[in-house]
Each structure stands twice: as structure tokens, then as C-alpha cells.
Image (cartoon, rainbow, N blue to C red):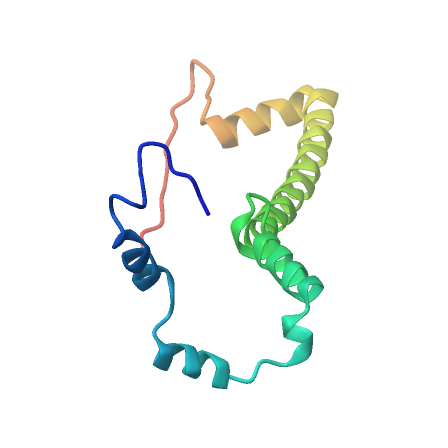
Length: 130
């Protein structure tokens, strides 16, 4: 018998019956639960433990399958960006070498890209309207 401090079962004999009503299944519900056929392998404690572990890893854990998939896709996207920018760096360095190799190419680049001109020149810009 459980001894609860400050509680005497002799003073409150109805406690057992109240406890019994709230802590047990009604007979009709108990018969319905017993009528459900559960395969033997699902009643195995190792199966139940493994299923709970898989559910924990799949959905509840901070490193679950969903977040792992999102992180993997983000890594792939970043690797694609890295490859793109590496190619851009190579192109830019090649252009830089060409521009710094001769002053004529540097002047042409400055006039085309930044619309620079000499002091005694006038600059006319034509844009095509669509």
C-alpha cells in the first residue's frame, strides 16, 4: 500500500474508489481494446523502441531528416555559386591582364564602359528605344 504523507486512508475510505474510477478503463472500452489484433512483432519491446527511435530522428530531433535535406540543398546551391564566381574571377583577371598590357586597350575600355572623354572632345550617347 502506498503511504502518502498527511493522508490517512481510514479517514477517507472513498479515496480508493475514486482513484479506481479514474485510473482504470471502463469494461466496454477494455473489451474493445482487447479485441484489436496487434501483430506479435509490433508488441515486441525492441520493435517499439526502434520505431520510437526512428520517429524521434525523423521528426523531433534538431537534426531531423527535413532539416538535413534543407541544409544539403543549401550546400549544393552555395557550391554552384562558388563555381560561378570562380569562373567570373578567371574572366575578370583575363580582362585585367589584357587592359594592363597596352594603353590603347585601357583607353578604349574607359571610353566604352565609363564614358570617359578627353578635354577637347564632345561625347554623344545614342540609345535605342524599344
